[in-house]
Image 1 (tube, rainbow, N blue to C red):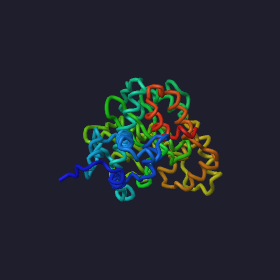
Image 2: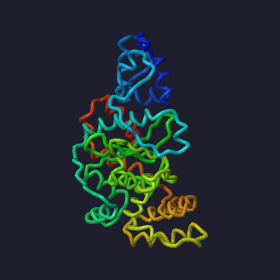
Image 3: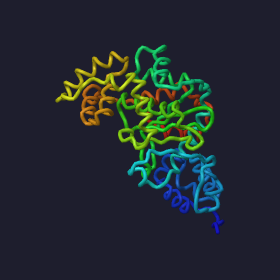
Image 4: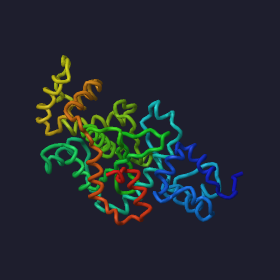
Length: 335
């Protein structure tokens, strides 16, 4: 029988801990900047605190108010995870559901561009893209996505027991939304992640059996859909794996850069992207990483994503509390 006693903040902390959400994250991210412990001293303050936690998790308020043994997302949906050992060791899929639900709610209120792209292949997407842009780089790709009804949201804050994602795409209504994290600093990584997520979208991996796809580590594709999304990305970026330069006998980072940088111009792509594709097809991520660091020593790709969020979302449509949460979870407060 469920415990229907009066709500208790410690019980809520314990329940959320079982979902991978630690107390520090609750206080610093889920609760607004004006909140402090003294608010819990009154019943009104306690109820306000619980309401804010529930709202920013997209969770059922009644589950927290009545000390239930479990907590549920208001609009639950199926998530497809890349099945790898590091993720299976984590607690639950509650937080990715929560994140998708809450951010979808915010996007719906701040962004109105309709999604109208009708793409079936990577080749078709490349042709459409290069009609308007001379090069596939991060700025152009972000501009293309926002202009075509696909917002890209940068997530910088996570509970400590939840692994950061490489990328995540969800479609809870008519609009797809892509989330990326701060794990990757180079433009090339974010370009590849974004196009990988587009692969999931245009290859119809988002459907009634999984309308959220959580990609934790793209270097180790563990199922057919992940492999297909990686191949979609490569085909969009350089048309075919066959176009990757032969680099079997390359012995130094300098030599790798000298071959990949001019070769990238053939495909109208950022040089770092071809470097990363070399890593995906050869498995030599260490050499590619050294080359990326050498070519782009001060990389900070996330700042570009944040700038596009600032200019494309109508932040004035959010309440002060919603704005506080969004700025904290995305790192806008640090900009």
